[in-house]
Amino acid sequence: MKRTAPPSSPTLDPTVGPPFGPMLDPTLDLWIFGYGSLMWDPGFVYVETQPGMIFGFHRCLCVRSTIYRGTPDRPGLVLGLDRGGSCSGRAFRIAAEHVNATLVYLTEREQVTKVYCPHFVKIKLADGHTVTGYTFVVRREHEQYARLGPDEQARLTAQGVGKQGAALDYLINTVEHLNALGIKKTELHRVLKMARAMQAT
Image (tube, rainbow, N blue to C red; front, top):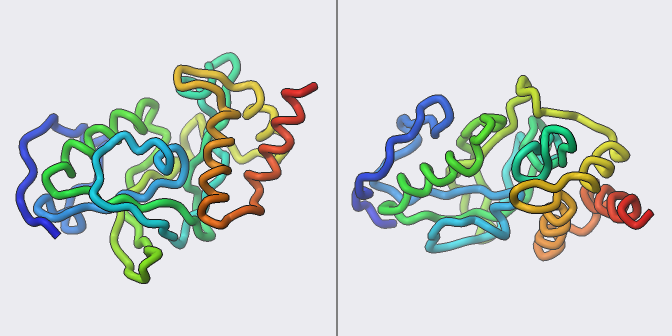
């Protein structure tokens, strides 16, 4: 791995930025774990990507979207990492010289309403290695956090449209990338089928 120091870049807001400390060495490459839109639209430069799995958190539609995939009056629903279980996704390795700028970008992208908490996790990569990675876990105390049944998940997914498009398209992309990872029977597949049926009526 490269061990050059990254160039100067904008200062991170410590209330929403990464938990800097002994686990984040600015001279080393950094792994990012994506479980939703980052899987198909990372928006940052990376030098390597692999399927990966984390433990202790699971992917679920538990965040009401009022900006990107919905509005305050007609919220959509997007993914969060919630406590318990495991989650398969995609891991991206960021070269050391791009780490700080990448974290600034991710903070601006993911922390508009501060519904997520930056978190370090252990990622088991497809090649058998385990690495420390950076991701975003949902804040259960946040007003956008919602644990809903499949029917309500489907309803919000079917109705939500925001600055980045439809919540249904977001879920379609997620399911397609899960299929590509060999994950073809999940609650998300069921909710997608229900949401499509709602839009068709």
